[in-house]
Length: 128
Image (cartoon, rainbow, N blue to C red; front, top):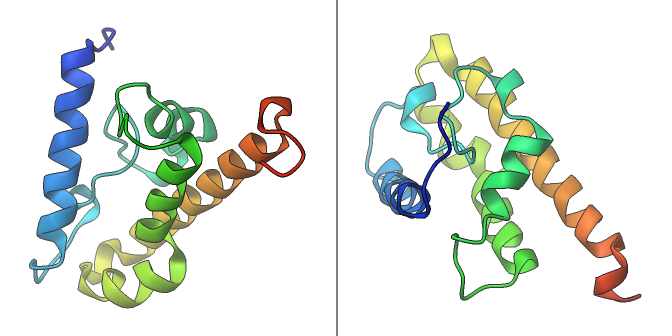
C-alpha cells in the first residue's frame, strides 16, 4: 500500500464520520458498513491490530482540536460493547454478526490498551 498523503487521511476521516452518521438509519448492516478505525480497510478481525488502530486514532490529521485521550474516549463511546451490541449489532446480517462482534471487540480492546499506554507514559505525569 502506498503512503497516504495528509489529504487522503483527512478525506478518510471525513468519510468515516459520514458513515457513522448513516449507520443509525440503516436497517441492515454488514462488515463493510462499518468505518473500522484503520487507515486501510480490514477484511477480517485479525487485521484490527493494536498498531493499525493506534496509527488511525493517534494520527496528527485526526480531530486536531482534541487531545489524544479525548479522541480515544470518543472512539470508545462508539465501539464500547454495551452500546455497540445493543444499538448496531442487532442490525448486522446474521451470517456476519459473529465476525462484526469479534471485530468491534478487537477495536474496543485496542482502544483501551492505547488509553492505558498513554496514561502510563511519562509525559502525562502521574495523574495523566
